[in-house]
Image 1: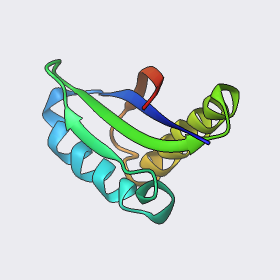
Image 2: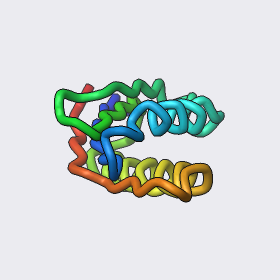
Image 3: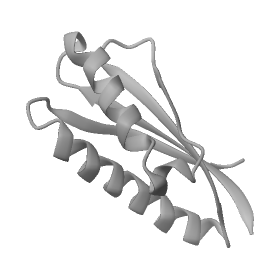
Amino acid sequence: MEQFKLQAFMYIDSAENIDRALLDFRQVLSQTFFAELSPTIKRTKRPGQLSVEFVFFAQDADAAEKAADSIIRNLFNEVADITPRREVSRGSDMLAYA
């Protein structure tokens, strides 16, 4: 098993909503599925952008890519359930060996 790091960028429709979105993301990331992935979330220098990082283990790079897709998909589904009034969009993702 190898350790991987996934960094995903999220965009909030309005920079004014960033504080509330940050709280919503933290709520989602505290759930068991995500908490096991050592998540961190922070603002970036770009207005309305958040960076979320996860650390996880996978057998190889292909398995890590599949896991990364699942993590991002689950994250968006969970956030969408609690932020229907705000538009959250996916930015770029970066997967690397940790």
